[in-house]
Amino acid sequence: MEGKSIMPHYFIWTIGCQMNKAESQQIAGYLDSAGYRAGTSLSNADLVVLNTCVVRQSAENKVLGTLGILKGLKNRHPNLQILVTGCFVNSNTQELKSRFPHVDLLFKPGDYPELIDWGQKQGIPIDQRLPRYPRNYDEVARSPCALIPIIQGCDNFCSYCIVPYRRGREVSRHLGEIVCEVEELVRRGVKEVTLVGQNVDSYGHDLPGHPDLADLLNELSSIDDLVRIRFLTNHPKDISLKLIETMSSLNKVCEHLELPVQAGDDDILKAMRRGYTLEQYRELVHTIRRKIPQISLSTDLIIGFPGETEEQFEHSLSLVKEMRFDVVHAAAYSPRPGTIAQREYQDSIPAEVKKERLHKIEELQAAIAGEINSQLQGRQVEVLVEGSKGGKWFGRTRSNKLVFFEDASDWLGQLARIQIKKTSPWSLKGRV
Image (cartoon, rainbow, N blue to C red; front, side):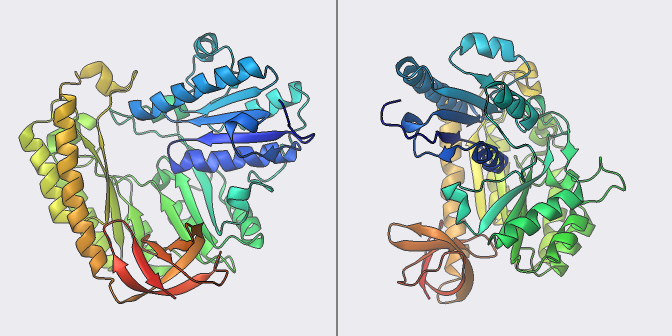
């Protein structure tokens, strides 16, 4: 390409879940080992990696659009290398290769041996012995927070979800390997880790001795200079009382849980194959709030699942009012080819009805979150500062509230005591 430096550059385009973000960091580590350096855009890179998501049609559309842009770039710069991973890559890679011949490598999520093998064939000396995180990835290198994959895949097969078909069955990383990686990251300045997986509550069931997530939390809490630990995503049917009690007993584990309910109606939950009833979900939330009074809870909701009646949607509204979540991630149902729901149910809810219902949920949740956050007005909170944006420092509280403040000092990676001066449903503003 015109104007490129002798040292080749890579660019990783990432969309989707925290697991994708974690895997992009690992891929960056491998490319760093091969002598590449992180670039700033698709157009000035020698090698581009698309880490993709197809959980919803909107995400898949963005992937297809970016693949189109890259096709044009490769026409102008034939030496550009394009790699695609993530949930867009299914088992039929030959079909994808015929659709996108400008792509040099398609590899399934987390299939790093395939990446390494391809690199060796291309004369790219990828060091497979490296810890899988970047050495020169600016976006990560100065961040005090790191994402740590602990389990790959999912065994649940919720009827709407494509993930088990793309990521496969659950495979846990060995506990000692995770501890060593976190120790190294802490040595490099990381203060907070988030353990990620499609279902972190299943961690360890496939390992010798069957260590679980609570055991892993205990091990990580003993690491000096590690300040905070988070984990996601959870499945309500798999959260144990042992895990809840471990959270409540460990100071380093943050008082925040993502607990996706997905629907507020038992018949819809059954059609979704979620494996719990609303009463069981309520009991779980009450137990968590009793054991960890300062907990903040986030949830996910799918709006307009096939056959969802107005009354069933009202049940979801009622659940949001009752539970008073700190955050609700709501999205309209999007049929995914190959899933149980796509095979067995017709996408019967009109788009305009989904949009109207989604707006009602968002409006209700904004009011609830506004009320919850307003209780922090005038109070002091501890913020781990993650970076700066628009002249303001930003970071999160232990309960995952986003906080902005202005100060001339360098606060990156530091714990700041911030007095909250202004609140909104989405963030807080304050001063040191």
